[in-house]
Length: 229
Image (cartoon, rainbow, N blue to C red):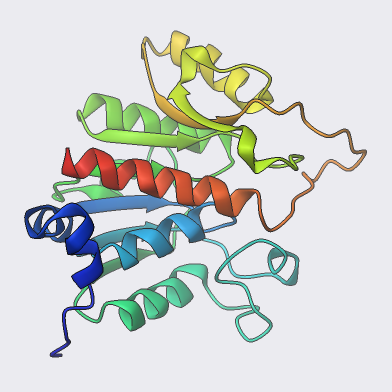
């Protein structure tokens, strides 16, 4: 499909050479929820030509308050299917691999076998799955950024990208720090919030549209900048 240069303004900012770098990059994104859906939007609109998206879930009505892919018309549909359709509507030339699986330490290698990956984005919530992704990236010398908790937060200005060992406050980051020490993984780039979690009684984290979305935009921006350095 022939298109005009829709990345013209991006080229003006980062140069044609760097746009070509992004085009030739391959990124694996785990999780298409409140954070991951916004990561994906930026990657697609930045001209990343090769995207691997992994998420087993279908869209639920409770996702509408914060997830980019969730609308009343997409309820009940697979997140990766909706995401792939959206990506190709943004960039018809993008190579999208959609994987409808729950990632684990045991199956991640089979998901990515034979694929040269330039960057991994971990935007999922399950600790065991996060550790599997992080360990895979570390063992295969792949750049990775991992999202810590964004639930029970109200101030998006409190997000920070740093090493896992410099995090505080975030309960998820505390767990990950401990587990990475057990795995002898010395460092990990993460996005976390230093805002004290807002107390709430439900076991399901509370959320609002403008917090996980900002986390996703910040993560994607970090990935883009890393790729064009």
